[in-house]
Image (tube, rainbow, N blue to C red; front, side):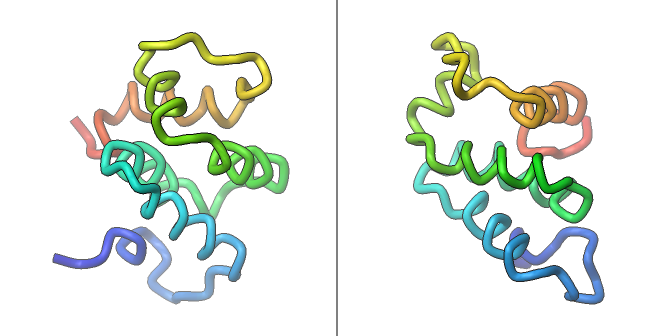
Length: 104
């Protein structure tokens, strides 16, 4: 099986180092559930994210896995300081495509 951090739609391999680092961090969280939630989204969207979206994703990557997972699954309310357009985009992506970005 191929490495999920390299299996998305960038066959030229010309992704900039910052996006490569973010993609790696999305797939290597420490909690497999978070790897799937963030990594699945990042695989599909990393090459199209704007500068503000990249900044928000980098900020989300600083959250503790247990907290982020609880917020994303609705077990705990999302604190306002973590709420942003990209967070809502990640949630909407998974609601539309299913767990880890795999199409239903």
